[in-house]
Image (cartoon, rainbow over all chains, first blue to last red; front, side, top):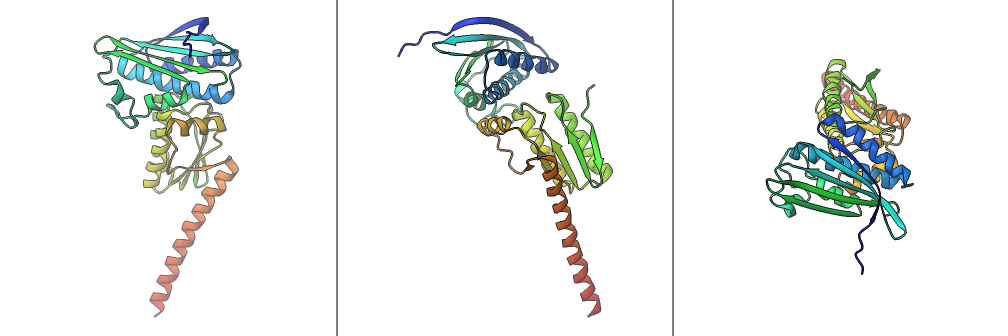
Length: 141
Length: 137
């Protein structure tokens, strides 16, 4: 199996620093998803997952930058979102990916739930430096 | 400050969410609704989510909270009009909204709430009948 990186067709980025930035961010993601003709169900999954990740970024990372990219691989195109924050980082990623694990008051569904909604999910974190979450939702995925 | 209007209809409170929810707005709705339940002695709360395009874990939790809290205050909650894509996404996310009554549309939701009130009234009448027979003996 070849693991070629997807080609980036379009780049956009949006800064999310407070809660009121979330609604415009979600509509921006939706615009891009509509532009590539993503089905309503996949749009909903993508935006719901994005909403979870952006909340984590605000709550634990004090906000950050989200890159929204239209990517293409083979015959499929999709949306890639990269959430970058300079927060405290996650000491134990495996634990954070467990259903029901939370350090806050939430239900602990954010990260594992989002992974289920997306086609590709990658999380990198370094304590004291920050966290980067990269997700891809394919148009027909 | 944006606010989601709460309408009173007889014994019920009617909420139609027409805007995209963010966390603070959802939290305010929770508090406003419970205050209204207490102020109006409402027996039922109907929340129409037909124009809501996404419900994530936070908003799902708020819906669940509203149902549980209003139940403690003797009011039933029905969530109506959920879009198919939203329902699929909620379940995959891991939030099946247990304990929240749902109906396909506002009309059916109203029927459900009315039937619940009728049932409660019948129960009460039965209790009165028992009292009546007791006192005649």
